[in-house]
Length: 175
Length: 423
Figure 1 (cartoon, rainbow over the protein chains, first blue to last red):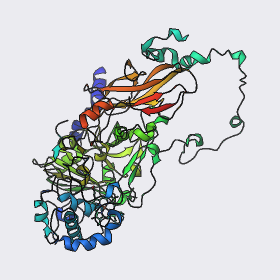
Figure 2 (figure 1 turned 45 degrees about the vertical axis):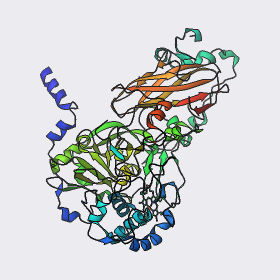
Figure 3 (figure 1 turned 180 degrees about the horizontal axis):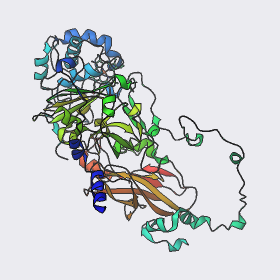
Figure 4 (figure 1 turned 135 degrees about the vertical axis):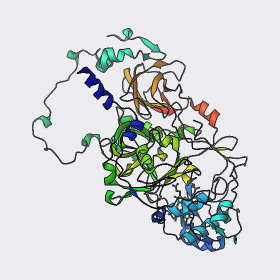
């Protein structure tokens, strides 16, 4: 009898997730293809993965910006509250550096990725992919990183070297 | 028992924690109160009115006592330029034990709280997997689940203490972006195994179904470790403001990676470099390099009573009480000082569960009407010791403000007023 009790105790004891996962084969996930996710998966990374077709220039993006962004981000990206400044700053300045898209962000891909998923803040995901390329170009242009006629597409966007591209240290495996 | 019998544990009135158990609180409080003899006071104990008429009967959904409604989260005023954005803080100084009531759990939203019908919600796993999968809420409810008690803390918590002048705040206003709950859900590893992770995958991108589609990248070694897809919070479905119908829960790490309203998990080679892991939740050091993916929350503690803006209304023995937690493990020691860190005494620790959960600590303290600076200092099972504010500033500089886990100092003056201070 005590033997049985011990076995039951072992079965009930928290052996950690690994053993739990092994013993479970519920398998209720429905298989799906990447094509079926084309309107759902908005992830666009620095390797160019996930960027849609299309292109745009800053010249075209000014119109989008003036209509849909400047009310919150200011006519020239100077911002209306602390969190909305898009332009300016210098990570090497003597005074405390102002950290913006232009001065701080290491990857241009993040601008596209973020605007497409979250902006304009009062109506996220209302822009077309073309408009996102255009206004991304405009944000880069306001920061003096590209000129106003540069055609921004998947490849040219990820090729952009941001001023602070070497400024970050990945701590994920050091703690 | 007389005051003189209480064994001193450290300077300025700290009493050996063993007396907590031996005396109980009543015994300690009587250090002063019992000197007034019962016959000399005018107390007459009566039957109160509520004992003389029946109250309302059982109800379908409970509410707290109207007498406790002063305990509120503090939420900032809505900002039309940041629709739904902002945070609310837990009223730590009013809470006890180690579990935060769901209605008072802190919040941080980037585009408000989506009103999600679970029947229309989906969780997709794609990217570097053998078979991309989609799960409905109903599907997930059928999986075996585990329950764990974990704290959750925003890495922006306590940043106010890094400013040049001490804010005249409370435990809530300075430190209220931490809470603790029992989270019940499916080990992430179960679903990853079902989809079959490709060998070259190193990171997992998690995305929420809020209007910001908030996303974070998590290294796969953590994802395989103790991460949950949480469906329940303290026994009930996860609250809307905590991610209903499901959130990722990443124990011990900065709250932002526990993505709420979880709708997508994508296996990738490299981090996505989301806006909230580049522009935000990164820290710039004095040499102007910036640290990214600084995930674990530091070893930390905080005295919640007495704490900022409270006042001591009598001299005598108080129970100093507070909370401690660490993203690196369990809390093995909490020391308390009443003289600004010159001498320390060990507090008694009470906790329901060790790893990555809140622990309570307490120690008796005799306040004799003089100035005091109350501090607590936690040590975790990895040997990490909570640093001073000076040490954090010396180490991290003035451009860095996430992950502040410095020692909190509360100054008590001769009138018994308690204020935040830098010591």
